[in-house]
Every structure is written in structure tokens, then in C-alpha cells.
Image 1 (cartoon, helix red, strand yellow):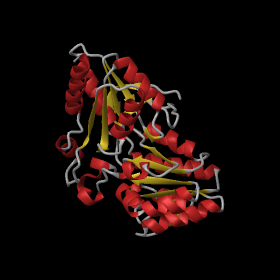
Image 2: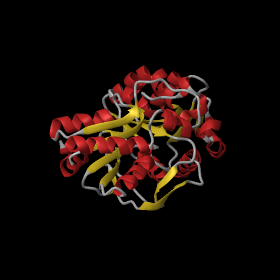
Image 3: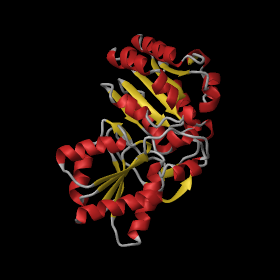
Image 4: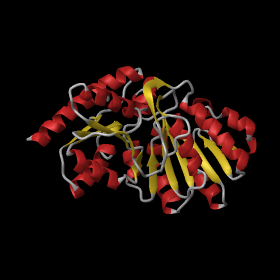
Length: 323
């Protein structure tokens, strides 16, 4: 793992879905076992150019998400490497049994790309806004769960999965992300990435909350509080060593995720903390609510997934530690 952090937080010029498509084209040009599958959302995820470049390895299953997972498992059994996409709500809620039995239990080798996680579903509204997708899959043995933070990480992770084996769920925001990493950065699946060191509290974040955690750390720094910021981009397997290490070094942790506080990052970190080094832990996430229609900025505020909330939780965790 070798990465460099951008000095400023700016929105990327290229959408995550465009980077995903180009990376898949690059991989397919070199590996004739790569297959891109979809459930009638190729325009949404931007993989139409892949279909034009490799029509013989493009399978649009139509609005049959569960069937797509079964077909992917079958392709895996004969040596193909399928990357299956649909919205995250459909990739998990509609396909849970197929992922459990046909994929994980059968030891298939497939990648499931679930797009528009949490508030990034925006105008698609409540039914298309998965706050529970990582939690649903976290209970299935052998499933690896990854949430790339920006297009730099997405490209690197997707390339790693070409030679990996097993069932992988990639939680993908389709639109333009805030760029965190500089080009050329590489990552190790299952290992957390430190974005800045700190001594008073650790902010552990994933997805769109990473940029918010960095903003919160800046605000805390202005008050003389040293906050470590850690990008936990692999939910399962969680980096237990990193969680324990930061619990011991800072004595207080805040988790931040674009997901329900139940069975997501906050729960995973809490389990490790409780078992290894109990310290004050505060969770920022969706508080047992359904989604709704709105812009990402509006929803970030409504669901309190913003820098302000992370900052307040950090102050609370530090106060608890000092007691």
C-alpha cells in the first residue's frame, strides 16, 4: 500500500462510473475471462462503451437482478470472471439468497457492484436508497465488502479484483467524488489508510464521509485538538489491528458512514474495541430511518452525515475519555 493525500478537497472532474467503465475495458483488453453484467442499468453506470468494445463479453440480464447473480455464479464455475452491477438496493435486498447460496456457499468467484449507496441515491428516493446493504452482506461468510473513496482508489481496487478469488461487494458512488488521493496511489484490501495522524481522538470514516471527517479534523485542530483520520474502506474484513492500535493511541474513536449505524462500520469497529481495548466510541450514521428524495447536500444535513456532526461527536468522545 502506497498512497499520497491531496492537499485540498476538490471534486473530481471525472465521474466514478466513467472510471469504472474505462478500468473494465482495460482489464478486458488483457484478460478474455472478464465479463461485465448488468440488470438494465448500463446507461446509469456508464458501461455502454464497454459493451461496444467487448459485445461478446457484455451480458444485460434485464430487470432480473437475482437471476443475474445466478448466471454470474454459473459463469464463474466455468472460469469466467463476472463483474455484476445494479443499484445497491437491488444488489443486496433482492439478491440476498442468491448471493448466499449460489455465490458465497458455492464458493463462486464474482464481483457485485452496488451503485448509489445511501444518500448518493439522491433523487431516486427512499426505495432506491440503501442504508442497510453492507450490513446485509456482512453476515454472509466469505463476502468481502469494499467502499472505494474516490476514482483513484476505485481504479486500483477494481484492478486488484481481477486476480482475486471469492465474492466481493463494491459499494460504488456513480457521480463525481471528492478526490482524496493523488494519482498512482495503491491500497491493500483489508487494511485501513491513515489520512492524518492524531493523538486526542480518531475519526474512522468510509465513503462520502471521509471528506467530512477531514473537515471535522481541521475544525478540531483550530481548537487545539489533534484528530487522527483513518479511511476504513474495507468493511469486511475489518482491519482489527488498526482499530485496536488507534483505540490505544488516542483513547477515543468516532466512526462515520453513509449507512445505518446498525451492522455497518460503527458496529464493526465497536466489536473490535469491545473485545480488545474498550474506549469511548461515538457513531455517525443513519439513525434507523428510511431514505427520502433530495440532493446529496440536503440529505447529508438531514441525516447528519456532515463535518459538523462528526466534530460534535469527537468532542463528546473526548469528554467521555477525560471523565
